[in-house]
Length: 288
Image 1 (cartoon, rainbow, N blue to C red):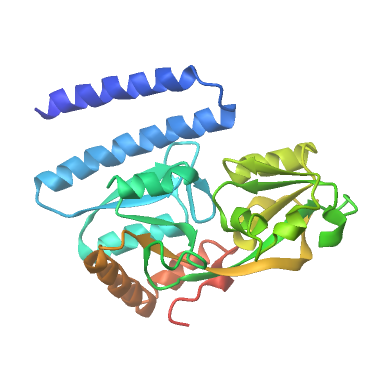
Image 2 (cartoon, helix red, strand yellow):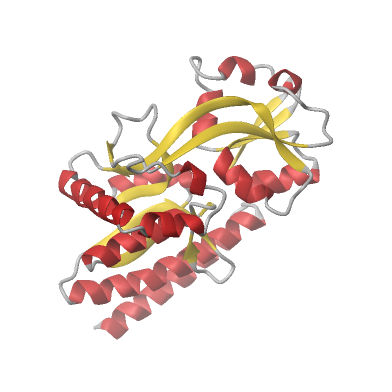
């Protein structure tokens, strides 16, 4: 039976790749979708094995390209602070871990369909308090503007008439479209360019296709590693906290994750994982 299932999965994967090839998405998107599919197939096999043994399979839903919190590397392997923390929770309880990477704008559809158990991927709880059941916040963050140091842009006022990039469905995107946030600032831009991922936006910034990026500081720091020509403006767009979003009726699972987070903070695992990601370690706020 397992061989039959494996064959069906393989045929489905080939069909998915063929359909992707017929689209008009950017090369970066195609590559990300292919590696996401490969990661999903691997973890699905592990999940099937775990389910057969009666073990709980924790399906971790995350943005496939949101470093340093979550990403899929060139080898098709998942990584990032949130990924490692989710795996640590599974180790704590003896659960099977299943990675469920997705394009960020599909997160609600994936959660509501039951494809994943939570959204755990640098997910801002501020302004969304009533939309999900939330874990404890585990990371602080700040929204800022990234520019080339030689662009002549030194203040938010200098963004007038400029092309500014932002990732879809992020806190920065929400801020720039919220009348109580930074919508008035956004109206001064020459254009607001919306991207599927910040990696693609940063590549366009380096190529000169856009003039600035509205981004959270931890992800921006990660992208600017080894890139001395870029900086943040001093002015802050907004502040936020990251937490794990669950379906509203999943109180038992949320409580268990919170208990595990407390235990992992107490035994030093949380800080130890944070040390691997210098761009975010100073923002970790769980029980601090």
